[in-house]
Image 1 (cartoon, rainbow, N blue to C red):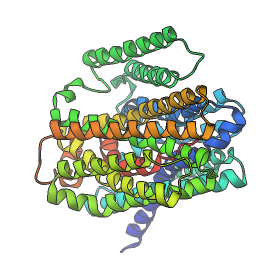
Image 2: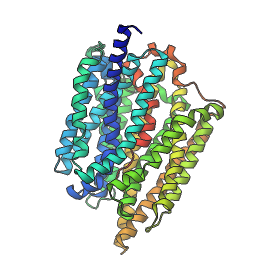
Image 3: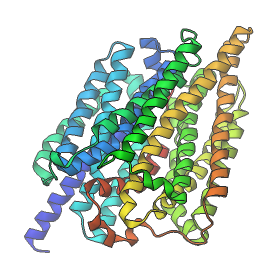
Length: 513
């Protein structure tokens, strides 16, 4: 290898390191923060449903702004959007780290979601640009995926260690040195690309409508169990949310450059797969939130023990996703693998719902985490491939963007629903004179059954909507010819799902109170 090639390879490797550093912060934030939530609740006085907003505010911003962020990458250039997202995320982490009230922390978390959406929407497309050669590109994607999965596992442990030794503020402040170094390196190392120009247009109105509608909808669900909220007020909130989301749909039907072209929903495969995605992520994310509550509020685990307790799930998810899922899909087809994964996930959730007040981790929790990890490790990659395989080449980016939004929206809505179910059940039992620990356990158990019901609905949707396919649909690497036809946004979000879906399943997990 001549010196020029060596220098170029080193420069690209450092640039890849910058992109991976941002992804590491995003993934760490999904787990390191959630393990610290019980301490945050005690110090800032969050209610159970209110605490979910520390997670939901982040997810809502991420979901609502992902499509607009990708479009901005097309208009002004990927590097500018990535660095803007990096700065926003880092600054928001500082706000969260110094927060001394519920409102300030939730605002900071929303801003973190904005930064994550900006960077995440373009980072995978930038990796594709760095490594256009198929072999090197696959290796780069492998490194990126390893950082995602590894960061998820590290975050589980680090969240407990940092909270116990330094305090919850530092789970946010730890992002500052990473963000500063990545920003300074990114200015020098990342290639500047010209965008189409702002005159090409971005549907800001559509982004405002979908973000506002989703935010208000999740807020309404989370407030059902709050005695301070009247039925009339909640109905009003719900009606406004529906109007905003309906306005988004109408806007997309008429906009010249919509964030989400509605023609995509005519495709039965894509629509069905995204229904399953919403249900799976609603069940998976909400379950992790409540399982952490069971471990800490019922079994008495501290933050560090909770982080370690969850390790079997991401380890099994990663093992199944990376080493077995694709092989099984090639042999049996996505539909069969997806059905098997959903069945295992539902079984694990039902078993966890039977965990008693005086349960034993090794007997009542760890086996269910392994079963659920097995199910998620099969189901998530299969449903991602299924959602993408149903799209025509010209709609690949559109389908991928829809899928990303379905993941984040499902997680936010699922968390709100399940937290509300658990709180309502526990409060009802407490009013009847039940002991606090027993009431908490029964509330969590009912929510676990609701999670299992979400998965069961996903199983039925897969069985009745998705067609049988004896072999796997073409993997993303099998269609490099289509890449030039896609714009920057499409490249980014298309790559994003396959590399990040496992990280979301294993990474945006342990939310506790």
